[in-house]
Image 1: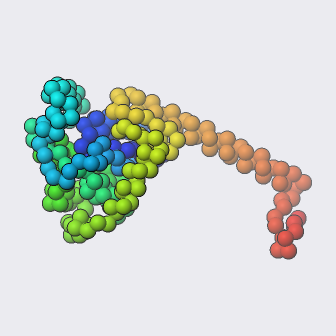
Image 2: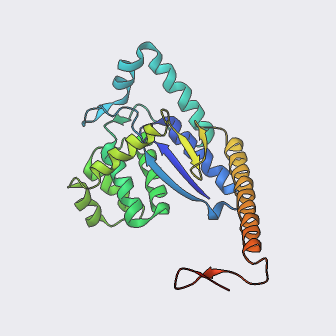
Image 3: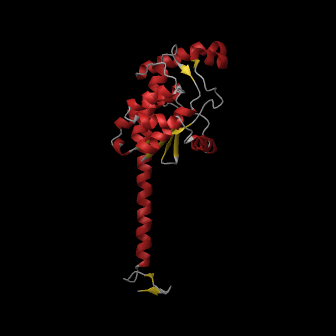
Length: 245
């Protein structure tokens, strides 16, 4: 099974969703066979490329409600084992970090990408990491097993810039307007940082539906084969374009 997760690094509900989904994956009997890939999404693509204190950014968007919003998500995070230290959070444009995640996927594989996603979220929300800073991003990548020189070289250029922007545009074309969104097998979607039980039910349901589809395909193939060999012989194309028996 493949699960594609559309999320932004600077999205607290994405962090909650990631934590709950991974807990469900650990409880899913076939969890080790599930491939998880993170896809980029930007809640604020117009955000400036400079670090700003979280409280200032949130207050500019939501006014007096900002502090209460932070308290609510911090309390929820504590229940999930997540440390939301909003006093130290720095907001920045997340495009560079998304490029690094795409680079990690292509060069190191999905498991390394998942590890880096977790490191970036933990750093951003709990350690004052600037997700637009080359040194901070490099340190995060090295912490999860990537090569420092390769990461530094990548971040110094513009590789995968257009590709990541295309991925973000594709997400919107698919109708994804809010994150996190979890897409199972390219067909079924679960939106939001749902409870662990909801993710577990989704994994189990998709596994059943996929197995049923495969069984139906196998049955149809068996029927087709039976028809082609109904006379005890099977027809194959002959070299001259005719049929050989």
